[in-house]
Image 1 (cartoon, rainbow, N blue to C red):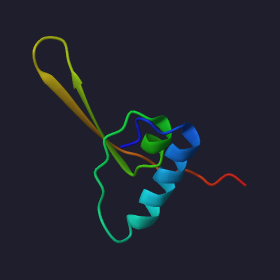
Image 2 (spheres, rainbow, N blue to C red):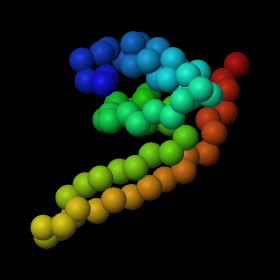
Image 3 (tube, one colour):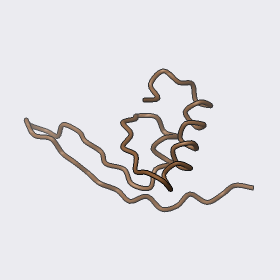
Length: 67
């Protein structure tokens, strides 16, 4: 969803999704750091050695606000 956005717009989109997450659940496919850092949970999917897929789920700690 954010592949062609610049960094500032990725951050704006991540903020918008986070605000709307009170009303709905979102599944976002992204490789962009600001989007991943703003998520509550992240699922990583990668091809492991050999011919199988490895799935890793992480629940990320809340990010502290910077003043």
